Length: 352
Image 1: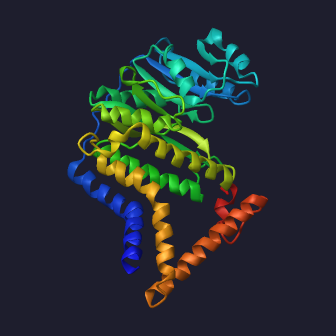
Image 2 (image 1 turned 90 degrees about the vertical axis):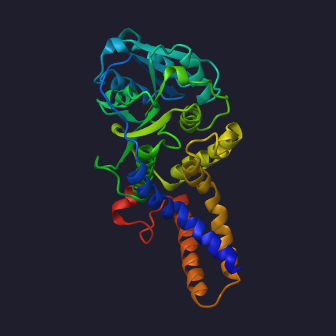
Image 3 (image 1 turned 30 degrees about the horizontal axis):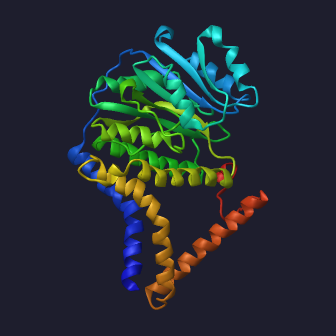
């Protein structure tokens, strides 16, 4: 039981602390900076949407106001079987150059992307969601990375904002900063193990149609690029903005989808688990697969700890008990729509 306990403990510590420390060392020893240079290739922005009547107009206006030559910018609204009249809002902007790819049936985001890509003419394809707003210079910053012939895909930075329009300092916001720090170091070494769905780009010739059931296109597409021998990099200068999740349950739903998508990813691209095929095998194993295994490691840590009640193990069990009781209390509060002042710091309540 002691062996099981310590192996579980070491694994959890490695995933969240040891791996970032290793990246920090490798970045200094074997960093590969991107040869970024500003130029103006043709760009197609593909905006995936289902029922977005209330929000899509703001997104279209945001794209029309981007600092990029209009003659070199194609904007496609990829509508996935909307039932709320989203298509009528898009039609209003047809004279301003907005194009629409419309599926009459709701078949999922990946199907909408595949359909839109048949209309896309740009050398560079930028994928986006409706909710997040681009910084005016976002497209220029993204495309500049493709001046480096080794770059096949580029992910921008999603900045989470709070109600005061400052960068979120809540638990979700802090975790996202940690995640972005990891991606920046991975990108400096070779590639990131996935992109930010709100803003990422790919060379047109590297796109392959997605299976309709794909849950996380922003990981499948970039990892296909890596397997094809190109780099997928992270550029914090290409920004998109969003607000933190309205409540823990909303963030929980996003996490469930992401984890399910990662399991699906291993089924769709099993070659990612082959070190001679995957040039970022260690990063992928540590970042993606490691996160999938952490819940099981937490389970074995707790179970083994129950059988070890002497010395330092008693302290570990007490700390774990407090942790899980706090988590359960936070869940119950969120179900009732009540703030939990003991669990959530004052500055984070708006995001909880």
